[in-house]
Image (cartoon, rainbow, N blue to C red):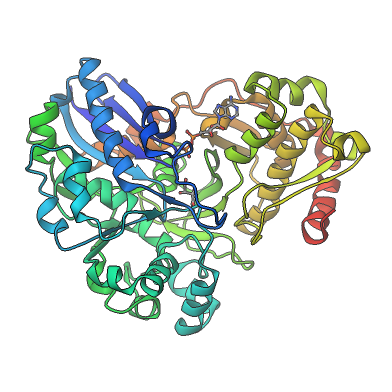
Length: 518
Ligand code: ADP
Ligand code: XUL
């Protein structure tokens, strides 16, 4: 009975999923939440407070404490980790970890201390900038100019210079803290850092996550000299090698054999980003199926047979772990913005759902909201923009149900507008992420896109995708794995065709609202 482990080190939590590919069962599905389970790291939503709303960093030691906490929980639940034959994983994209010379020895993890204690002296920077950081507009401009302009950047890397991408973040660190940059000998992504920990080696970055750095030549599958040189001095030697997702890294680190009973033959494969892993887990790794993920961020993505780029520059091209490419558009104001409305009116998620399904109707009687509680990345707003347009009760924040509908209608319209460049509007969309449990949210998305929405039968598509990548790397065929594990829930959400024209009309008004404000 071969077991495969998928890990998902995401913005707000670390999850694990263990599959048995003989019985086709999920053996274990467990999550450690950074805010509630590791409150000592002062990161209720997975990142540290900063007075500058554009800056968002996490403590990488929190991610490591979560790994120890996770496998302690496996012990408590009597999960036999010695049956695991392969491990792969997913990381929140773009975030970077800065390591000094001590890392190359320290990563063998042969001391008795915890992972966090062993890695603490190996960090050349105590904070890791994450994907929510938008503080690098100046650096984006500098990189773009040095590399020959945004069009050239898109041609090489699949994206224009983007604030949250790793290259501009590295440049900012180099400019603000040249000494610590100089002491840095390795820069890992979240995915390759956690892979290094699991394997006890200095692991590679994969094409899926590597494409989110503004450093990779996506056609060549190598670091681009032009982009690396435009970003920071001596950067190439600080970057890991880049390989296919799911490549064999090594056997699991002895740390996990000794402390948690892993089998010393268990293999670790190159990790990828959460969105590429989710593409696999959702059974969407061949072109034709679009996915909307409603986690901390909302993302829209789909497999592509050839790389097509977004003329407006918001979309990206990443490597697809199952081969070829994928398109992706990310929206920062996803779940945390919905939570702001939930908290403002002291609602439960069940009440939030009822507000949409029973208390309000499509179009919201003309009430509309700009829902950017944090500076948004798509479209790019350098400040928060929460604006209401409509009747007096709504604009005075006195109508809870209308505000609930307004935020979700605005998010769905914003995603539809900014994904139009990919081509035809899909007629079925698969949905995942914490908010995809909410039928009210899904009904609005179904009506706005006029598409049937399908959920996976198994939750957490990124951890599932990672586990499937481990099984595939170990020899199992994609088609069988996807047929067994990526089944959709028969209860789909169907669009109401009578709302089609109303939302087409509202889309035009919303576009104007974004450009002109209330
Ligand atoms: P990530 O992987 O980015 O850490 P998740 O996919 O786990 O995020 O989603 C977490 C989010 O899901 C929470 O921030 C919460 O707002 C949202 N969520 C959880 N349950 C519901 C629900 N019933 N309705 C809407 N949103 C929900
Ligand atoms: C994608 C993006 C986010 C993160 C966190 O470009 O920034 O979706 O991967 O989920």
